[in-house]
Length: 218
Picture 1: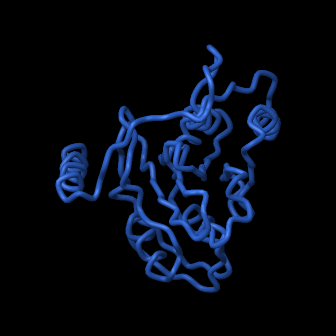
Picture 2 (picture 1 turned 180 degrees about the vertical axis):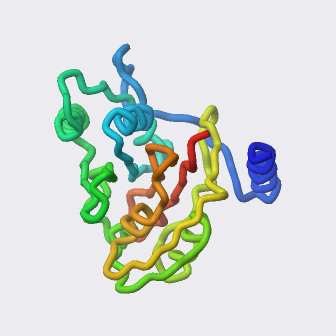
């Protein structure tokens, strides 16, 4: 029944013109035969080390909006801890920054370095007080109403599995949190996708960051 409801939601969004499909692109050359997509690797590391990730990717006109999450990376070969895995991955992907959430140390934020210092970057915004109770997509909409330049993702690459989190509730009571933390720290993690959400943002001042919550597994 849940699958049917999600399918109906996707169909309704397409019919209303809220969703669109774009051609898939990558930002890398020919992949190493041992490489996997960044998102798949993070999901694997999440299971191995019982942690969770978010991914913030930037894009320019010649790039796909989800190119960072789909980029080819080589899995760590020598790591025996999460810290070692992150260190090895960071050396192989110097364009990415890895930041452990200061309030939830099971969450690691993976950030495209091209977004560092971008004027008006919404996920860096600190909100003095924010109280909310509702579903994740509503959370994004409520943050947008408060003036943060973010929205719910509505464009997907050909071949990309389209999933929406239309059921998880977040109860937020935040003081002096960044938007990044608000989007992450109040999600019930047990049973949730190891990549909690991805964000795509045009590399240009005050661009909207489009958020895609991955939802619960199963």
